Amino acid sequence: MNDRQFRFFTLSISWTWLTVFALVPTLMVIITSFLETNTTQNITAHFTLENYAELVDVAYLKIFLRSLLIAGSCTLLCLIVSYPFAYGISHSSLRYRSILLLLVIIPFWTSSLIRTYAIMTILKTKGIINTILLSLGIIHQPLQLLYTNIALFIGLTYTLLPFMLLPLYANMEKMDLTLIDAARDLGASKLTVLRKILIPITMPGILAGSMMVFLPAMTLFYIPNLLGGAKSMLLGNLIQEQFLSANNWPLGAASSVLLIIFMLLLAHWYWQRNPDSDRTELL
Image (cartoon, rainbow, N blue to C red; front, side, top):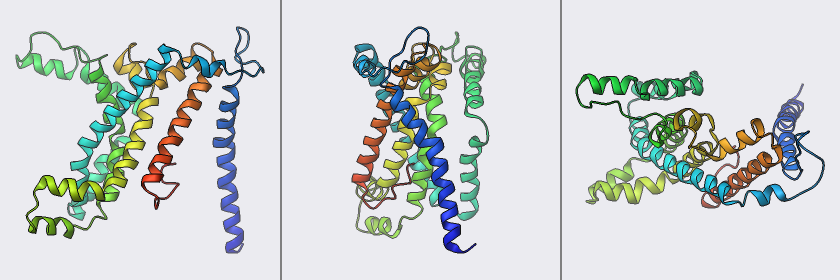
């Protein structure tokens, strides 16, 4: 087999895989979003736009806006935590850099669902935090940490932090440190160096990491269910409920299509800001 045949063979496998497991399911979701539902079957082959009209309802708009707010706050929190950590890793010695990166990657070796249950063990009324605070006499009653927005943010941030940290690290590793040294020699303060040099240079990593955190934060339904309680209804919970509980597949599909459109708009915005970026790096 020559190089041309091998290239054709590998590309054929890749395109077949993407077609069967990505394109076809997406098309099925889009088609389902324009169908009707009834009490005896999940879908009926009657074209309608009522599913999209129903999403304009105030209740669904509140869920969408709440999802945007929580996902945006989680993204900002991940950025604040990850930025100095990524800078420290990228400019540490090669010996310690490998160890620090390994510590970032190790959580991926365990199911995120198991890690979420571990967070529940830490935050519950008789969990580790309340037990320590009570034993030290800092509090006299257990704090209500679980089933709150605080628990939700902790769970989302802990789960999605590596998705922000790794793009930042990849961007900072290539950074020319002489620019920072030159700025300091010219009398620039640390804040000026951060605002005029670090942030502009690392903006591609910031944007890529923000997209990789923002979109999953809107759709990870099990974290709001386990840590946020019944009141933490996000877009992912809405889609899951329509498919698995309400058996309203068309409405769930319409919600998914709305999310796909939003994702494409964010990707277009990212590529407009970074015209030289690889179009496949976010897929």
